[in-house]
Each structure stands twice: as C-alpha cells, then as structure tokens.
Length: 305
Image 1 (tube, rainbow, N blue to C red):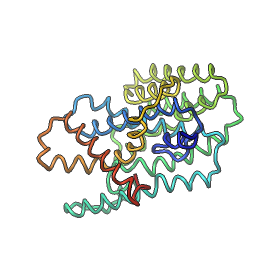
Image 2 (image 1 turned 135 degrees about the vertical axis):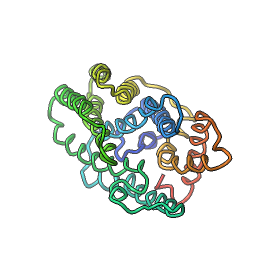
Image 3 (image 1 turned 90 degrees about the vertical axis):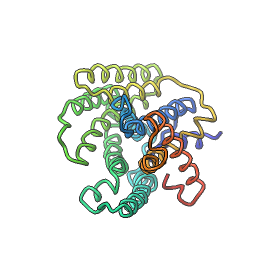
Image 4 (image 1 turned 90 degrees about the horizontal axis):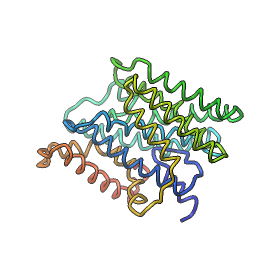
C-alpha cells in the first residue's frame, strides 16, 4: 500500500490528513468506527448509556482538529478551503437538499433561520462548523509554528478546559451545538501540536499528559463525553496498532454513516422493524447506513459520502 493511500484512509470528516504511520492511522480508524456507532447509539431513544455514547461527537471533532493542526507542512489557506469545499460543504449542500425533500414529503416546514445555518437536519451542523472552525484553527496553527511546543500545548489545553467550564445549557439550536464544539478547537490544537513533536518520547509524554489533565479537569465539570474522547484520541495517537481488512473497509464508511443514519433510523422506526429493542435498532441502523454508504461510493455521489 502506498504512503498516499494510507494517509487517505485517515481523512474522515477531515480535509487535511497529516503524514503519519500506517499503524497509527489504523488506531484512529478504529476509533472513528467506534465514534460512528456511539453517535447512532446516542440518537436511539431508550438506549442506555446515551450520554457516554455521545463521546462519539467530540471524538470526531478532536480527530478533525488535531489533524488540521498537525499537518506538516501546513497547506495554504486557499488550498485548505478548496479541499474543505469538496469534503465538507459540497456534501452539506447535497444532504441538506435530501433532508429538505424528505421533510417536504412528510409535510414538515423546512425554511427557517436554523436551516440556513446548519442545514435541513440538525445533525448536519457539524459540516459547516468543521469547515469554518477548521479554517480558524489552520490560521492559528500557522501563526504559532515558531512558538515553543510546551507553551502552545499548555495554553491550548488550559483554554479547552476553560471552555468546558463555561455555561452550555439553555442555549437554542444551533448555538448549543456550536458551544459544545468550542472546547475541541484548542484541545485539538494541543493534541495536534503534540503530534508535531520530533522526539518520540516527548510526543508520547505530552499526549499522555494532555489526556490526564483533561480527564482530571472534566470530573468536577461533568464533561464526561469530552473526558472519554480526549483520552481515547490521545491513546490512539500514542499506541500503534496493526490495521486489518475489516478496519480498512469500514472506516471510510463512517462519514456516510453519520450523514445517512437519521434517514435509516426514521425508516426503521416506521417499518416492521419499529419494535426492535434499542441495541438491535443500533445494529440495524449501523449496518444499513454502512451498506447504503458503500453503494453510494460506487456512484457519481461518492464525493457526498
């Protein structure tokens, strides 16, 4: 397998995957699969442990922002935006049209301020948010390249913790979603800057330190999802693992699974499968969403999944 193809496998919900080893890409790919299942689990009514499963969202955010910050060399902003359009905005426009058509078919309104900001379904908020915040982080990462690693990591980690401590309840959609994702920007910068360290021991120590500091800080803040996500992402970068055929085939489907799963879940709830218990529902949604994504990847719509 070529180096470029290995790098491409890591490019999930991401427009700038960094050069890295195949082993660590496999670790991140496994985490992406876990995160996709967690998001489906969180969106399943009646499923136990939904708040723990919600760690899937900050996992995706932290992977995305850490990849943006650790790209070496960092691309020009124009190149970043070009890829962001292809990987994030074009799929966002397409799936907004799909969900808008579905809402029209069921007699629900589609045009409001929220639709203009996040798309025709609330879970699509992630795509424009990742694009805009990714660009901001890209610019910041470029400006602090010559600042000492330990200083960038310390300040970014502290800022991330402060953002986790801020008020988040009572905000309307999509402000609540945007507010939830803010802490991932500096934390992603901290993790990404750790990955840029040339000395392996310093890199490993720094990643483990970030994981421990965030874990301890999140306990009194009740930020369980971020605690889980930060620890898992840092460990995925620290501990290499060997890839296999299953991971290589399933990981590229996770973006499409994220985009499609609300439609699949709706269809299952309004069919003979509506009586499934929550665990079985999650399994069915994951499998069907993955199969639909796999099918779309062999059509002209592949750029949208």
